[in-house]
Length: 311
Image (cartoon, rainbow, N blue to C red; front, side):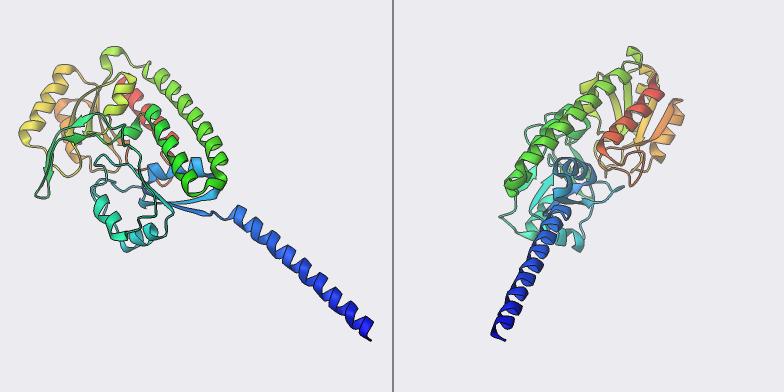
């Protein structure tokens, strides 16, 4: 009887060990499948960049959802909850997210890295402006990400930020960052080819929102005017009349507006100036589906729209 009992005990131990090994295996598999690094970004463009570097290891959420202006987004209780759970946070900076400082201070997690991706890269000045009773001095143009070559620096900062909080996967982050930067180089070459289809004398743009200076500088376009320096400021009738005059004098073929903004004012201007209008560009937010559901797709869409309107 004692021998039998001893056998039962041994059998039970073996069974329990097997069960433990299976459970451990399942946990290991779950760790591979389920993202282990919670990342928060200020907008969807940055979230896409993080997803490309982080791969399946990260779970990334954007505070300002698709179709939302990242300048004027109003954080919600859900925004605070997401920030409180994040292991690393990325924002653009250079004055893009006017709501950012107050929001991040309300969470108070000094141990969580908060990384400003445009730092050291935002070198183009934007004019001072006022809205809502508040005045803003001249500052940096924050729209750095519309230059794919400068985005490679964003990718490096994202790689370093993820590696800081998750050193175990640093090698994988480095590999994915390199692969994505190669895609950015391919995008850059494609854009240069496409812009080359526009006659040199027609490489001029007027936009609703002053967001395309970095893009224009990289690809040899001239920004000849805009309706607003940044969202929230209404132009005067005099300023609009001057812009119409300039469009006619410079023989600018078309004017452009982003899909996220109300384009009625630009439509009136285009009619008065007698030029084409394109109203479906994207800059600070991806679309929830095609045509601009990733950064690469957004840039290809914008360039295609511009080239078709200007050539």
